Image (cartoon, rainbow, N blue to C red; front, side):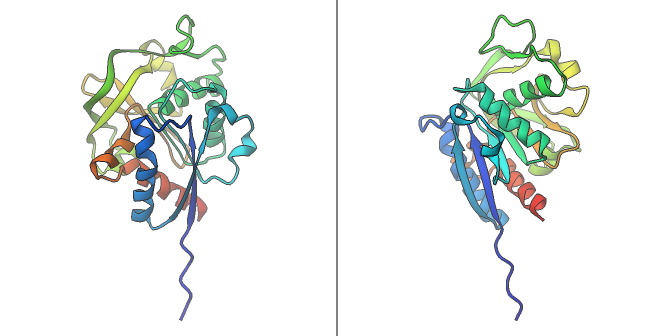
Length: 239
């Protein structure tokens, strides 16, 4: 009889400063473990604290990168380095909450060439703060999101209309949204007030970032579709 193929091993880097008090950080390992069972893969994940991330070589061996909530990060440069590696090396990437914000910032600085781009949380007086305070803080709230029909995120959810939870005070500054989203970085989700809530990168196997925290769904007993989609993308890239 032919041998059964080995179960693929997927290694995920969780980029962020782990804090067991943060609800999203409690949810992340559970979300990945459930997704691994459903996708039929072996899973290894490792927390990579931003303060210790200084070299792209530290991300070698990981199949995917998840930039997690919990900003401001202790070392913004470490988070931006991980995002840049994922973008340039075509490594499957998911950014949630703070990960969304820093994915936008990395793109602004390194793709658009806006070297003066800043995050309004850490540089509130910056002239080019591409992330600014939301008109209404989204702290422990849930809302409906309309997804772009042809987007990776809509395919992951199998729906164009979803409801997710937030713990966030900063989003894309509307003053810069036009040029930010005029190229490869594209809007893929908006809330009921037409505010941007998700983006993805064209020409990349899987690069999705959401202002909401999809990982929280696991705490209600549901497998987050984006956790499953991240592992599936890693498996596809391995093949």
